[in-house]
Length: 86
Image (spheres, one colour):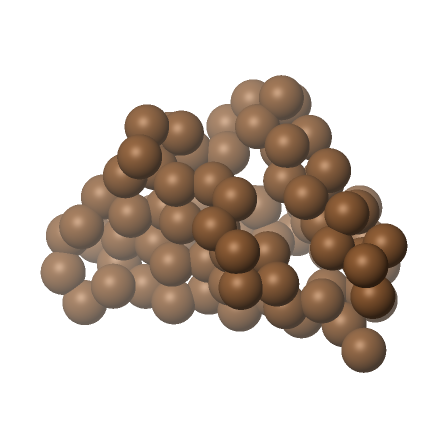
């Protein structure tokens, strides 16, 4: 069964950032993830990433976008840990 990844992003312009992250994660974990994105109806500034129901990246809490290798690797580590737990 694929691991659920949920991204809630600001619907006022962050969809491209979500799609970039989705592709990068699918390339890193082919066939292992079920990634869904949800754009908010208003401008919120959100870019929140949940792995298996646990919030692991939050723009609203100061993490910004997933725009550096270190931020991406933080997500990769969280996904690997969740996959290892089954």
